[in-house]
Length: 372
Image 1 (cartoon, rainbow, N blue to C red):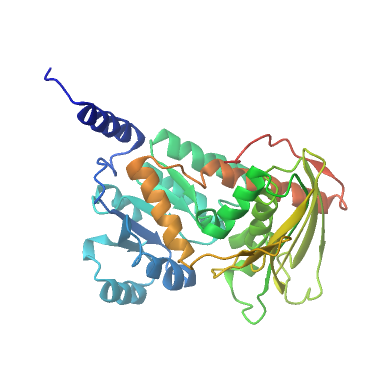
Image 2: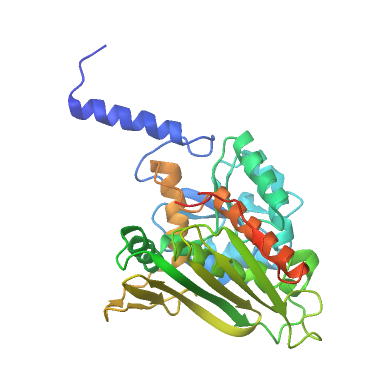
């Protein structure tokens, strides 16, 4: 064996470790100039107005393909994004993606009840998976997705865009470094008024799996966790509706109260009938907040010391998808793994259980599950 310099040895070692990180044939190299191809499954508003435009700004991934059940959309997207014919699939032909070397990652952007099916099929096709939040409509489905990805040696990310943007990361830093001491109280609101679109799939429980809680409520749960740095140990919850004629099949408004391991308490509020977009954490020696906290940005924040939390705005979805691509290419940490999506669904199910039992306290045994 020829002699290697220290630099050559380190480069060789890094290349070997990178190869080990790339479990799955879709990503066989660690070249810093490599860009991974993403196929979007479902071309609704989020794909059209957020994901596809964001993929025009990403450094390590690009829009390589689409999956849609609407021929007119397929034609329009092909022209707009110069997509190859062979990279355009229907839901019926989706499984053929297994032989497509242009596509490394499948991003499932379908109604919640379809997440498990297409994530599992993507994993079996040997493609890495991004699953839009919520991860599924049950903990059981989350387990099935996680198992399929593990069995097929592909990576899984949940579409938690906020974990990759700087305002949320600043909150996590202040909590971890105890900038204002231990967190004692957390309040998180995530809500919007969805009236005016009675035919939307989010109001159909068979497609959504629930209402406001399964949509915006996941952001409130997330905020309470990274705004405290802890998983809750119990939850009590209440549901009410002021428009039962409109919200016939899904929950309109839910409030919930958490307890945390250090004795801290928290409140979350989520609704499809009002606006809410704030995270507030009160600590031993001060407080901090984001307001707004969970929209597409720009976000804004401040602290009890009069400090403004401010960063240059970047598309959150671009940061998220690039972050996953760096995880695959270079071994960067996956900030939103499947375990985190499962944890949040455990909490969602506990909230629904508490509501069904008249608001009784439901214990949560999460430990450090999903905490990064």
